Image: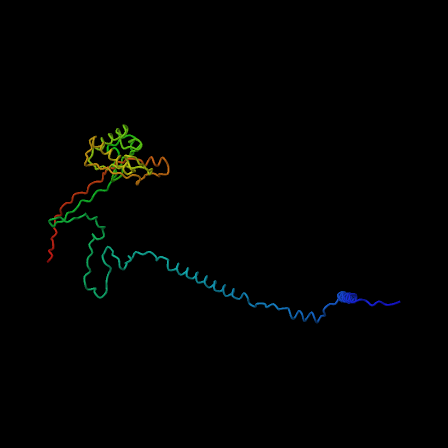
Length: 313
């Protein structure tokens, strides 16, 4: 019987199988590191924890400081209360240095004590009366103006405004009386000619204005909605024309022309917000401002003339 030698491939496969068996036998043998190996590895990789000593020692110092501060505050409070107690009342008058009593100046014992103290008039203790206004005159004398009395708003009855009705809003203060009339009552839309109802209102106003001699300013106002027609290029022309129409009607009804003036403000002086139709309607108005401020009192000549000092050339 003849033997057949294995080929090269078979020998390589046998060697690989033998290597695998040896490795498997080594894995199954249960090898564990010795006690010495474990100690060496632990010593090589273990790092001991450092424990900080006296980590809270600062807290004791902090508490001591707080205690000292609290004690200091208590002492300060006790001292302040001790000094704040008022002394017992006595019959002896207390003299205040630097103040004036009924007897005059405090007693002075200094270097100039031998000189007499200047007496203080008793009238100095009273508040001074308001000084009258003065004005120099042409002849060198002084004119004293009488003090004007305080202003007070007149009543509606004293001005004769009881028969005016509800078509005109009347605003009264210390300086003037304002008659406020809506443009819808006086003029047609976009026009400056008085309507029949507007003529009636102006006649009633003229009857009131003729009872006095106050100056009257007729003011025309509009809303910001622009207007551009053949007659009025803008709200300035419209408001001015409406104020002039009212002024002319007042003159026809007997109001003296030198007392009157007309001015147009367009939309520059609203009294309500223009964001709503009602506000814009309130701003379209004519106002008659009657100046009732009292005139300045005439000056009176003083008894003692002031001498003029001549200056050299």
